[in-house]
Image (cartoon, rainbow, N blue to C red; front, side, top):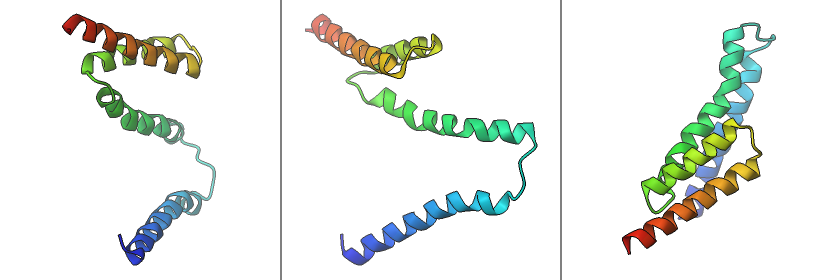
Length: 107
């Protein structure tokens, strides 16, 4: 890739990032009073993170079944309010064990 094109890409990304962060400050001058808007804005980061993470969960393992098993373990532990490290390690361990069991079963 040539340098002018790269610099153009960086400039566009910087502009978009700046606008996303600056526009709410320019548009909303006073405190937001609506409970609906507050609730909506509170849950947007969680929804976006979920939308970006869920497809990666299903496609990051050797099979869909191991991905679903790890996802199920993570959901159960998260609902039981376990720590992030516990949830992540348990989900990874589950995926590993399911993959291992599938290899031993099939082979």
